[in-house]
Length: 443
Image (cartoon, rainbow, N blue to C red):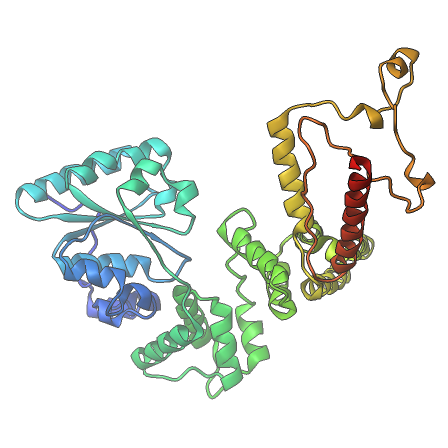
């Protein structure tokens, strides 16, 4: 029975080999040759342990483009002696899957197991994903799916429960440097780049090995004899590859999370770096302004009461100046918020008060603090005994304002940082006056 969807890249006419993309020609022949992903392929890596224990199960390989997911899947099949079949969710439908499953059953009956590699598996709809479950459970195929999207959002829970998710990381600058050297060895030539341009090339690849090799091919094709390109010439040639960033997907959420946590962690330099990456990738500055306003109230609050006005002012400045001039106002805000004293006391207090409000329903406030606009209400005790705080010697009456059903509560606990130190002193003073009044009333 023919392998309708299999490919064997080792069967290539020698004269055609040079016509293949560099990324294809450089594909490793063993897992030991794979660059990067040491957390999976190192001596104690998850994949090494699986192979060593002869227990390869279904996998979901999740990570950015150009990190070796397809290569590793192919090499895994070689390591365990499985037949390798590759399909793409972009070009395959239900009929294609049925053919693959039929072939896998045929080979299994003849003692040969199948590793089915599904590229961009997240593009299959929910019903199509469910179609994998029976053949995974009965051992017809070992499924290895590759995705650039978060499996938690894009894949069925039933499918995820039957597969182990392995995270592939972007290639580090050192990894890309090693890949660049491997390419030069195969091509038997050194790229015509200055040291600075070489580093720039690695940066432009943005952790994507396939993109790096594509850029290498562009340089080789465009370089003049004896030319040595500097940074400016390189950027002009490749017209700068856009960073891997989709405002509706994982990269967007990863970077805004990084920005928020570095502001909260009081690291202005790291915060400015992530802010700049988002701006550079085309993020909407008004989205960033909104998130920074949130940080001002969630993570700084009353520790620095100026944080919120600063955030509003930066937003207004951006709206007035537009891009790119207004981005400087937002950058200034990032630094201000990161350097400000931190407190989430307001945030915690609000959540606590909200939980209690939902739990207790709608008990009536004490009548003493309710107005009595009608005679009937006045006759029934509304407003009776209310003390006007400004008429007291301390400007503080110490009356009880919580509903009797609930009793006194404490939600807001200011920290010993920034302006909240002063607020804490003030609240402690009020607490002492309240306690003194309670003692006097009880005497």
